[in-house]
Image 1: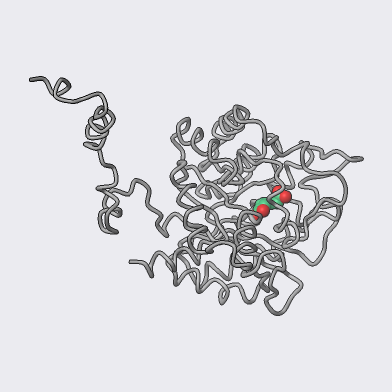
Image 2 (image 1 turned 30 degrees about the vertical axis):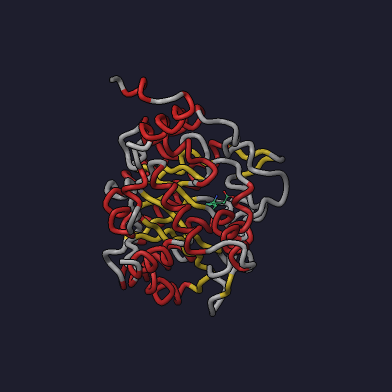
Length: 343
Ligand code: PBG
């Protein structure tokens, strides 16, 4: 007798459930070893980059109020400051500088005696194998806090380009492995590539902040770097949060201009952009979990509202799952340590 005929109508729901329960995804979640075996996305410390703030005008580390656990370091202290990162197995750092002197044109960005070149020299002499990435922008070096030369209230794209190129060459001269232009000026990657090649740095790579959005999540960084715009905002050069296709245009241009690595920034609110970057380009894709993403977790954890380690690991796993090969995060050192502890 066929199965269906052996049952009264009242039994049908139960019969249906029997069939459905032949598929049990929970089987593979029953234990930690099983879950580990079938995990699709793995975080590893090799993909992490730890940002550092180096200030020319301080003698002792100063904690950044809006980013608990992150510090401005004196140039002389940068090796000491980075040793926990190196010891945790994080292989790359991203250096930001805070100069003593700012001016209208941000010329100190390219000063070979400025905080970034000096920090790079110190880091590379102590840790030759550490990958040192230098952020290239003018906002930390201009009195008005914009990322380029300002005329009236507008940032002049083309006039800014040579200054960015000069800064990139200064960082390459100091020993940077990678320069990371973040000013969002059109043509910045091509201009920097040409300047690096012309100055004997054809082996220095460019990690382009290709899809960098005008984001409220940069707030704590601007306190850390003293780079809040004195007037207006960055919407005339950074991207609009509503745009996804435009990110592909930006990335295609940067690839054409010679970018070696493409970055999406911020990360957590832009996972779709990371995914489409991964699908569209063969280049390594980096994602920057920015200051606001870090500080949100810190602030909630400080109040006991969420578990810091769980939230940080989950946020970084999500960024990996979306397709990032490289993750820049203020949590890099902590996460590398936690990953090691959980082995
Ligand atoms: C420089 C720069 C910024 C960040 C990285 N490079 C600030 C900005 O664009 O306003 C933000 C990083 C962060 O928030 O962690 N232009």
